[in-house]
Image (cartoon, rainbow, N blue to C red; front, side, top):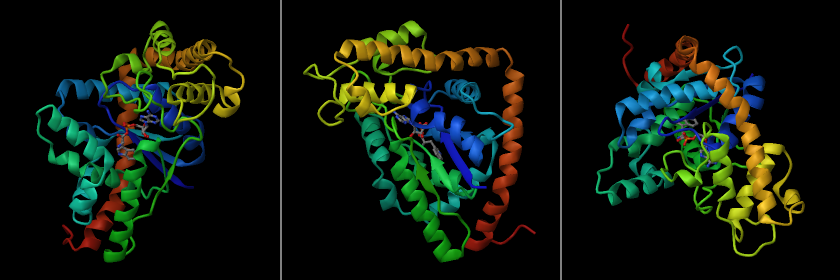
Length: 332
Ligand code: TYM
């Protein structure tokens, strides 16, 4: 059976982008067809200025939402990254294989480092090495497939390069993984600025639909989404990013193809109305289940404890093998 690994970073409240770009496929496809692991990657949340209490709260909330959205611990492994030491252990070895030039070329590093500097802050070294830790997450498990949104493609490419290089230098140790993306909504855009990604760390509330937004808030955000000049409903990401984003969201919610859907609508208003209702209906069961799970925190903790145990057992042999392969003396 193929192995699937993916992760989500607790740097903000989870968004419709996270759900449509990644989580939905984890629920509907990956956990049924693969030996799948899903991880709240809390170590990655420490790469930018953070409040410790908030990271803890968001980690718990992300784990609860993954279960609310449909991950079933009978079918897959759900856990928190920092509970499994193998990630950090392997990350250091991979730092000895990756180069600083590779790190500096990463788009997300460039963007986040620039934003940090613009705020007058300094850039944490861990922000630069972020993709190596991500490679460790993936490679520790012999992962075949990494289901992610569009924005993670470059990181998975780097993971492949590092795996190939390690295998060539020190002997075959890692599986070289490939990326999978959803057919539609692999990049959900900000509703107020449809040329930039809907990101959870953005505090631009009006352009971001959060999974726990009340129905009225979802409706308001979608009805106020920025649309393009002109009034014809067409799917063209370059020329009509706002309308195309709504068409993609609607297609992802209801199934179907954004181009076909474009032909169904004559006005932006009716497209927005239907999109808003589709998103409200999509989120309703997730929010209901989230409420139930919040009333039973011991259940979520138990899932995470067992998940970490399983993950540790899966990762340890390969990480130990990497330690031996690279030249470290076994502890005996
Ligand atoms: P993160 O936490 O930013 O996002 C989690 C997943 O959601 C997808 N996503 C989106 N998809 C479509 N449209 C959007 N607007 C959107 N925003 C987010 C992301 O592509 C991702 O699949 N570096 C990763 C976390 C990570 C990881 C890993 C992922 C760490 N280690 C190992 C896979 C495997 C990240 O920051 O995702």
